[in-house]
Image 1: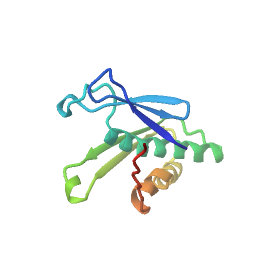
Image 2: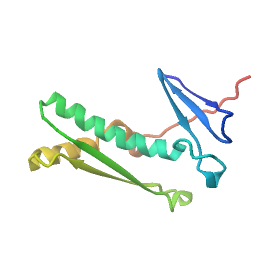
Image 3: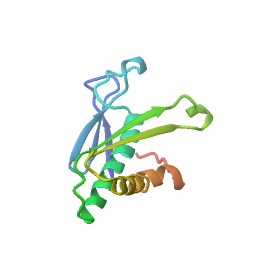
Amino acid sequence: MTIVIERDLSAPMRHTVQIGQHRLVVDMGEAEGGSGSGPNPHDLYDAALGACKALTMLWYAQRKNIDVGDIRVTVARDDSQESQGTYRLQARIALDPSLDDATRQKLMAIADRCPVHKLMTQVTTVIDTVAEV
């Protein structure tokens, strides 16, 4: 899959992101020179983790015929030590209170095995930046 990001001249820092048939806006906050019209790249990175955990738990529950009910994932960022090499995310997961403890524990374990969690913690990412003419 190819993702395309293009500048949107309607705001100082705004860009559009095209992912397949989906289109969204990214921007920086006003303090960074943007207009705050969309999430910034760190927000998208953090959101990818939360979304992956939620979807992975639901995927597992559907395959095991578990009526999972509500799933809520809240991701909090602590980037205070990012320049020292530590970027800390806390994912808080709220599951339907009707679930028994064993099911709840299994879903929490499944959440930690979501593909984005693995990418962020277990994989070396190689990025090649190439200039196009």
